[in-house]
Length: 221
Ligand SMILES: [Zn+2]
Image (cartoon, rainbow, N blue to C red; front, side, top):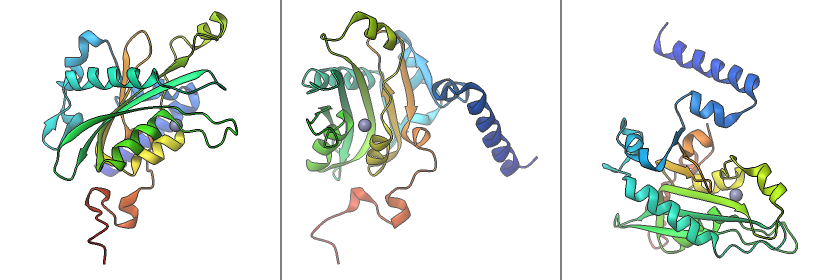
């Protein structure tokens, strides 16, 4: 079996597993594209093969913890009077000078519902509007506010608030490739994966021959 055949075989095996389990997160973990890690074991993750080596520098333990902390700070400003589900996000992004900075965001709901913005979208908008167009990593947190019943809260224990489909597509525009995605529940280990795996075979700026980090409105011919 050559390399290409092996790749195809793996793809079919993945599909079969997905159909069998109906559990995408379980599949992510099984295939090694996501890992559950305890905070005390973070070094094990970033110290493993270079999956998260970006621009020659690794995402450090401290970066992961800071991203989750900033996402939680963003969550404090969540405006969710309709769903009562508060989301926070934080993105580690780089500008054209390769300066790195973290931008946090929260979900912002709307009485008309459809104009609602996700936490990842508001964080991404802050980053891009400040000139930081390469997303190296981002963290997402979420959960119901204090008005919701314990019964409902209990149903969400152990679930992971992964970025929704629109956020995966929106952030792909600025994917530093790889872009680490960290999902942190209130309690328990983090889920760590990549945007590429969360949005496989996705359509992005490369399909249009565009590098978002190089776009300059004064240099467009
Ligand atoms: Zn979203």
